[in-house]
Amino acid sequence: MTSPARRSRATEAFYGRRRGKTLKLPQAAALTELLPVLKLDLENPAPEQIGSLWPKPVSAVRLEIGFGGGEHLLHRAGTMPDTGFIGVEPFVNSMAKLLGNLESEGLDNIRLYDDDATRVLDWLPDACIDHIDLLYPDPWPKKKHWKRRFVSRVNLDRFARVLKPGGRFCFASDIDTYVNWTLTHIADHPDFEWSARKAADWREPWQGWPGTRYEAKAIREGRTPCYLEFLRAG
Image 1 (tube, rainbow, N blue to C red):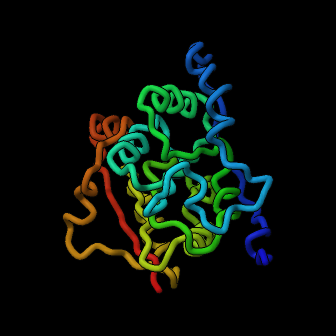
Image 2: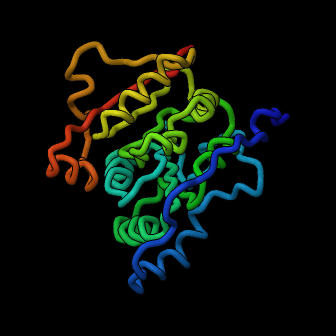
């Protein structure tokens, strides 16, 4: 039976732009033709065996929230063909860009959702995800907007529910206040622990990291990226 906690909705909502420049014709076509094929159907219950979302058997499942240009998602999916990936991105132009590249890459281990990531988190079964990535999320730098940041107690509760024991939540940012915000929220949450044991663990990217355009921009502008990894206790 689906628990009340999974059906309930907090007062959080998606903040930010949905659209940018007019799409190029191939991107618009990919959005129209390919997204409906790959999009998660949240109108029906999630399968008990989440691996059935993909056409081939998968040994692990990863969720990336806000994949931006899709560089990281496509790289990981290409180098980890036995892993099923769920990518969530509400910004239409970013979704269209990824879909255009996905067609040329020929990958079949990615499923997508183009709206609020909390809906996906509430739809997923308990303890079905091995890894969650939240990479360079919108930092909402003004203090009055900090409540809009995706890292919050209610969303960490969602992460804790869907992650398997020992599963990983990886967070990257170049904004010091958001890094400190995240560490504070993790310290206050009983289901997560920071895996770092030495400075290199947060100063150096994870193995196989391809970089992103947001990271490149941050480095060009003199900001230092930080890479945090947290383990789901239990």
